[in-house]
Image (cartoon, rainbow, N blue to C red; front, side):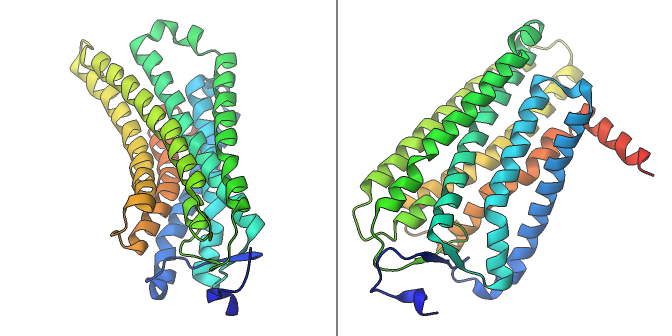
Length: 314
């Protein structure tokens, strides 16, 4: 316990993750919904991957993007939740500095990837609804592969400076991180140095990723909504609008908590720390749980194949 609050060390080999400060007595109870959400995320996303892989009729752009999203959600949630549960259940708060930086990289890398996949899916829906006759010729397998590669490269490259910037700072005051995982700003705030470079880079990435992606998603769905309201029948409008509104709910469940967490770290000094940390966990877990439900179970082709597999297992 001597590592918890020391002032005479330099660049510690381990950090201490406190979990949710102020709510330590409730850690076990808080872990229950998080564990349930993580279990649903694992089962749902693996189910999506299995069904799309085994059903040749689902080898289409929308389902390829759905598989990319499932893989991203699995990596993102698994990067944080197991360690968080070990803090809550086993009081295992220590994390090696190198593992902390690795976790930091994976979190920011795959958050950027998920944002890029949402843009790709919005593009797919835009072409499918606004220009359906050109959908198969525009979104070819080769084009989808290029989009996927661009999403992966963008996330990987933009997140790469985070661990390198965090590693260069001297840590000489404390090794206690008031969080459940190694978030970039939460880590570099412990440095006894001017961290303006890290802070400004985080702002730049937030603009390049969140700002640009939200803009393109908003433009796509604006055009989609215009096309929906021009459909000739009320049933067609309601059906298409129902699908798009559920997609928008998932997108909002990702961006709103992420934006709240980002702004709170920099400007929300009056926000209670425990509330901020809970929201920071929700923006990783909630979309990972909702995505396979909204995009999978509510998609007729996937739902039919899932029911077929369930009935033939008996």
